[in-house]
View 1 (cartoon, rainbow, N blue to C red):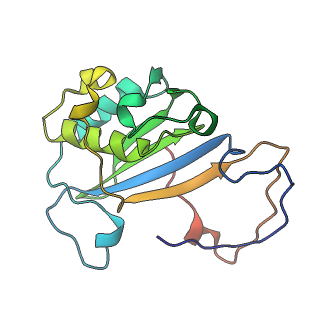
View 2 (view 1 turned 30 degrees about the vertical axis):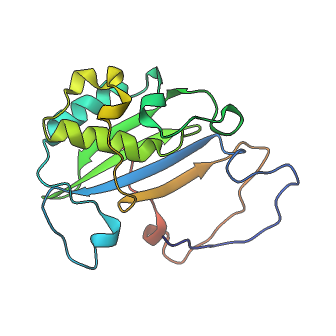
View 3 (view 1 turned 60 degrees about the horizontal axis):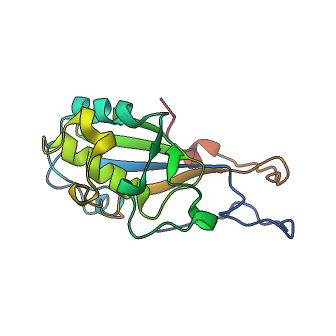
Length: 181
């Protein structure tokens, strides 16, 4: 992956880039075809044909509900680092062109590989292997981990105690994350 630093500044001594965050937002890009351009292949997962309506219904089952997300993690969570396994996740699936889909996930702290496993479970729903209404009770072994390509960290929010420096870009549209539904 790549990182573009638009500004560097000194941080407060008690600031931690991950642990001080109050919310992170990820997007995951899917192609509903078997292959994409080699220029795009690093940035999108191609699981094949998917039922996006079923995936959106499954996302609604999890969206904004406090649930135990340990099913959607790998390994044992570290409470000091990952927080509680019960999370309140904002989740949406939407079409992103004729043969593309976008999964948007936002949470305070994510468990290890949580976004990729949520996407893997949603893809299983999209392929008809899991039921949308059963996603909140699915067994951990039924949830595959989506590959890392397709995943993008779009935004990190910090509390007012750690103000972000003002950033001025010549073309801010180039760096803006996908709009939230």
